[in-house]
Length: 116
Image 1 (tube, rainbow, N blue to C red):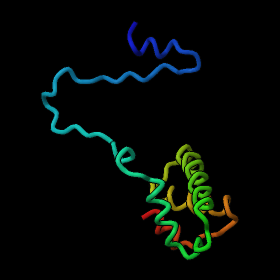
Image 2 (tube, helix red, strand yellow):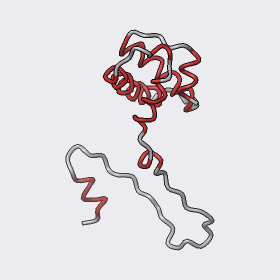
Image 3 (tube, one colour):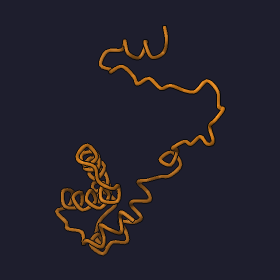
């Protein structure tokens, strides 16, 4: 049984997409791989940025974890809506997450800095 057929037969899983891979590499000039999330500790980096915000000066590590966890959920929600540049997704999601997690309003400058 082909791997795609085996996966499609598992309960609760949709049929996986079919990718057509060229038989030869002839004519290809480049091959790219998205491994940024694998190589970068996003949560650590985002926490370091948040630590610099005056609005979050008194925030604990637990507070920052709450903000970042909620921000991820908000990001997914924003990405399923109308298209917007990713910088706007970041800017909006961090502001909404701080408000939702800690009832704290970040400044516009802080939200823009997070998205930079």
